[in-house]
Image 1 (tube, rainbow, N blue to C red):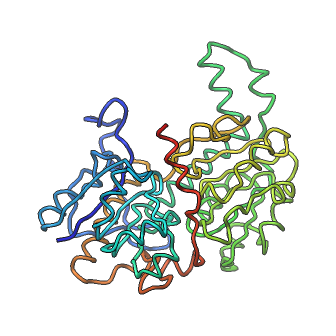
Image 2 (cartoon, rainbow, N blue to C red):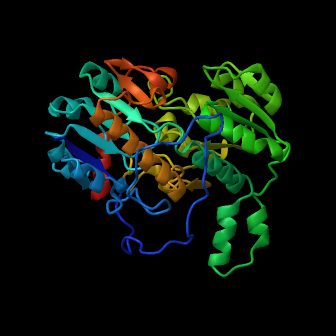
Image 3 (cartoon, rainbow, N blue to C red):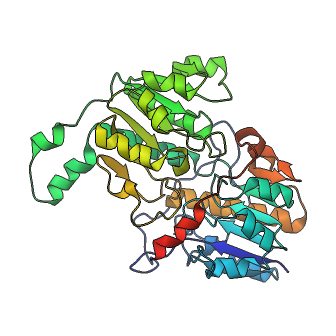
Amino acid sequence: MAKVVCVLYDDPVDGYPTTYARGGLPKLKRYPGGQTLPAPKAIDFQPGALLGSVSGELGLRKFLESNGHSLVVTSDKDGPDSVFERELLDAEIVISQPFWPAYLTAERIAKANRLRLAITAGIGSDHVDLQAAMDRNVTVAEVTYCNSISVSEHVVMMILSLVRNYIPSYQWVVKGGWNIADCVARSYDVEGMEIGTVGAGRIGSAVLRRLKPFDVKLHYTDRHRLPEAVEKELGVTFHKTAAEMVPICDVVTINAPLHPETENLFDDKMIARMKLGAYLVNTARGKICNRDAVARALETGQLAGYAGDVWFPQPPPKDHPWRSMPHHGMTPHISGSSLSAQARYAAGTREILECWFEGKPIREEYLIVAGGKLAGAGAHAYTAGDATRGSEEAASFKT
């Protein structure tokens, strides 16, 4: 019998929903590029239901308990007295989402003597100290591609929201006003702008494809260059480094994983290289941007706007400067947790668990760490190291 600890975000303040806005989800057969969707033997949930909160349980309880395993589900994840801290000590498997990450630091991994598998229900496993996982032979897996398109749609929405000054304009309506001049004084067209992505993997490439019809000029940087045919199809220009690309761009969107090479990439120096009045959108990981440098750039006007849904730590402290800085479009981490995406990452989590319990190989594209080294998607996207430092600050959200 395995003990599984699952950390999920809280239910809605009005209680777990009994009805939903729509009756179901569109049925997809494959992801762009041909990768198949998660394929567990069965699911015990209705696609389109809220699965990522505590009561949703990722639809796993019946499956796990009917096979003799135990499941602990909690949202209490931060601090030495948290439920997660206590239950981790004898857990074999930990599941959490990037949106409400259970930070598996080296210290926590060292205490969890039975821990063998850490699953990210979603994509992006930087909340696990990957070096510690390698050192302790803990397998790390995530549901690759499950919410990549979800995030790419969110990126385009945020770019348009910033450039067109949507959020302040909406707020004038809520306040009962009709202040057209106030609304349009910071509103521009995206058409003709130079837009670049830092990272052109599944999300970054999907962003480029969605932006092309807006008649913009596209740029990208990535340590893995796209095939020449794809560059030609998208009309996108490659740059070797972010430092080379950002001076050209009116809008920069970050779509790269967090690891030691990308941590704090957008600091004062990098932001100073950007065009005066450029926009920065970050749905990748908060720690890729220096929190104080972003706030300063918005205050001075070096940046015209900053939007994203990723913070560090998560949840961020109540006094985090990104809550109060001017000209921002921040939300909680929601881009990859639409009800559509939840159905895929819940199914993918079950597929990983089925393989684990049956002693079958986990899909190569789902693996981040295996056999004491980076593997699968992890070997392609990450560098060894730890990006969890400072995560203990998340405990201050409770106070």
